[in-house]
Amino acid sequence: MTTPPRLVMKFGGTSVADMERIRNAAARVKREVEAGYHVAVIVSAMAGETNRLVGYVREAAATPGANSPGFYDAREYDSVVASGEQVTSGLMAIVLQEMGVPARSWAGWQAPVMTTAAHGSARITGIDTTKIVERFGQGMHAVIAGFQGVSPEGRITTLGRGGSDTSAVAFAAALGAERCDIYTDVDGVYTTDPRIERKARKLSRISFEEMLELASLGAKVLQTRSVELAMNHNVKLMVRSSFSDDPGTLVCPEEEIVEKNVVSGIAAERGQAKVTLLKVADRPGVAASIFGPLAEGGVNVDMIVQNISEDGFTDMTFSCAEDDVARAKHLLENAEPKIGYREIVVDDDVAKVSVVGVGMRSHSGVAQTMFSALAVDGVNIKVITTSEIKVSVLISRKYLELAVQSLHAAFGLDKV
Ligand code: ASP
Ligand code: MG
Image 1 (tube, helix red, strand yellow):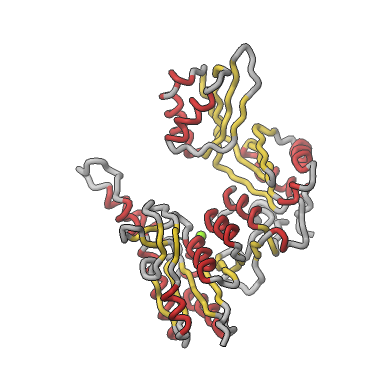
Image 2 (cartoon, rainbow, N blue to C red):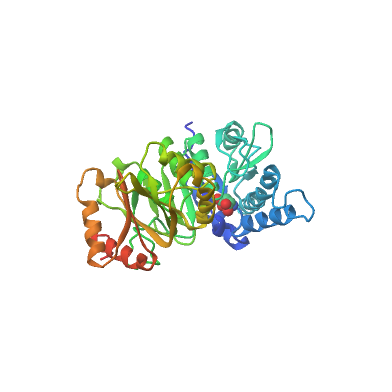
């Protein structure tokens, strides 16, 4: 007898937000079971639940009189916030049983899902699927609490916000699943945010690399780490809606995409800021003296440009999240004696717009098309960076919508 193919089905928070939705999700699981799959269901906590739990932790830690208010034990944070997934996994198992589908729940530590001890953002180091596979053999399907695992010390860990995507991909890889279906509240990956451009199209396929860029650029469909993992283990991901039967978007190797666009998607991020240090000495080590303290202070620097030097001085500009500006300024002021500069100038009215596509590797002129389209609309470019499959620009925030729309048209992405 051959063993049945395996399928991983992941349901996000909105797909398990209440009992009715859990039943709806379970009905989908039942269909796949009837189609002959051994199914591993990965669940998130109910929508909003993890935020609520994080809120409790903050409240508990703010006890008046505590030595350092706001400090909390990250191991206990994990113990609290991991509980949301424990609830939905149990409920899903009950509902499946009610529907006649044999199923049981598995907490991260029960599988087990082994992780590092980096509480709050642990990495999966391995998954032992022996017990789950044994149960498959007895006709028992698995409902697994996403987002959680167990540290080498035996403590409960969590994988960082959005981490149940990563749980799902890791299980798909470990189980050799045929596919990993990510059920969410959007019906796929779009050429750009449909709220910004009505003519945005759903992509039937997108490559791992493009998805990775889009995910890290803030298209919040999948946790970035899950895409990385899927790419490394060649796990086919299908992003689809729990609320419709439309085919979703398949995230797959580039070779499996027939209809290739030079540019596949346009991403936009609003909350950016541009910071310039005026008149720093143009000498070896100056960049290190600026970006060293920023890195140590946890400021995530994105783009960097250095002007040509004049009389031995130059201007150094970088971008980061708007929320990090105050910290960045503080760190740079402390480091002023070592760096030496005249002034810090902050422009926090900027947005980042990026065009992404693997076709850029073999087509020249993408940057030129982008700059021309923006020029026609009178959008001034403040900073530019490029990678092999991406061109990003910083522009004034008020032009974000206009820029996305004109680039969407310029690269032939508009829905016809
Ligand atoms: N519930 C967790 C969160 O909101 C994990 C997830 O849903 O992916 O971050
Ligand atoms: Mg998510």
